[in-house]
Amino acid sequence: MKIKLNWDKLGIATSIICAIHCGFLPLLLPTLSLFGLTIVHNLIFEWMMIGIAFIVGIYALYHGYIKHHHQLQPMLIFFAGFSFLVAKQFFHDQQILLLSFAVPLIIYAHYSNYKKCSKNKCSSAHHQH
Image (tube, rainbow, N blue to C red; front, side, top):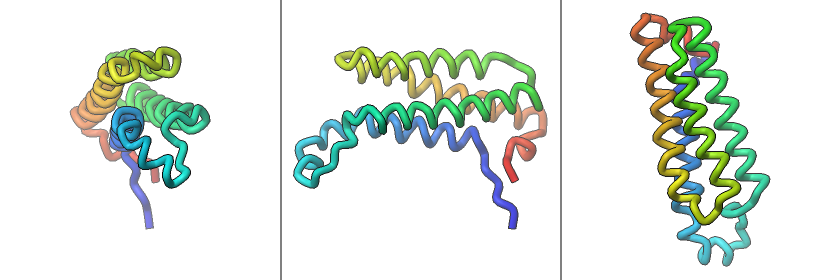
């Protein structure tokens, strides 16, 4: 059985999960601490999520660029969004503002990459077997 994985859709999902974690989970902080959960401001967890977003993003966008559409736009948009994502780690008081730029830019980069690959009728090659 072959499993097809669309890396752009995975990138979008990762970005949304990151936004939920960073934006909404702190609202639940008092409840989570009752259960001993400390993933809200756990630096290892946050850097791991950022690392996953980076790996998925770079793989999907580089693959789209090299194999399919040869356009830098999705990669440049991704790097702009990713810079906001990393910045939120250093400017905690501006976390929500920085995420409001990071997540839409990263999602749009993946969406744009996916559309450019699809336009070239090569979206099936954008999957891992």
